[in-house]
Amino acid sequence: QVSPKYRHKVQVVGDLMVDLDSQEIPYNAQSSLIGLMVGSKDNKLQIGVPFCLAIAEVLHRLQPETEFIIPLAPTVTLDMIAHYANPQDNPLIEKVNGISARLVQNDSPYLETKSGLKIKLLTSFPAYDFLRQCSLVVTTVGANTAELAALGIPMWVLLPTQQIYAMRVVEGLPGILTRLPTVGKGFATLINNWVFKHRKLYAWPNIWALEEIVPERAGLITPEEIALEISDSLKNPQQLEQIRAKLEQVRGSRGAAIKLANLIQQQIKLGYTKATR
Image 1: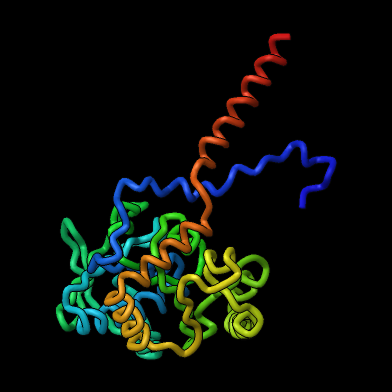
Image 2 (image 1 turned 90 degrees about the horizontal axis):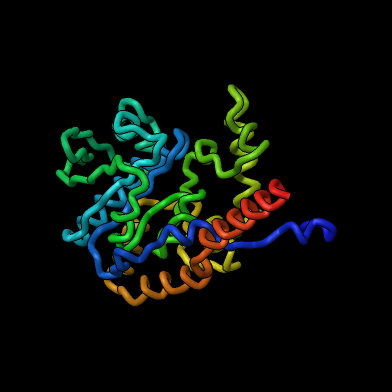
């Protein structure tokens, strides 16, 4: 799409995020560890925290060997997670069929549900070493779907719409409109309804592939039905392996970082040559 007269100045090096995957920790489709990426902004955390907690609760009941981690984004603190897991602070817990939990802070902080399920909170960022040990990750839409695809990790991408105004699914000017005081909720509902009606794919790997290679679930979904789906997949590691293989195909090959470094080195040498003439 670059103008022809400028194309000689442009070179495509590939996707830098693919180079995140060092393959030092091999993917294990039979792992009992599940990642929960609950969001990085208030509007997503408000839904993502209780919804993912409920998924973990049901899934653990179905398969007691499962364990769970929540890697925190750099913008998210332990207090924020505790806030959105507390029914006194988060009125959406009940509306999205979520559950509450209490924060336990020690050397390894975790959330504990009323049933006693403990979900480890990871404060180090990025948590790639832990994510690579997960059989799959439950996440919402956003750049994290591209990151997980670059790591080759199967994911379930969720967009619960019980409170459609609370889930801002767009950025740019429309995203700004949804954050306006007073009228923001109205804009969010209108824009989100339009997006859900006209856009079929939400996760980046699916957009790249032009097909649903990782499961996307949007609408009036419940934690119970998502947990049942995931449970079936955990019993069928071959299905997860197929998702991972498709992610590797769509993400492309490694080497973008080296190509970019070489280009920079060439420009430095060129600049030095010109300066010494």
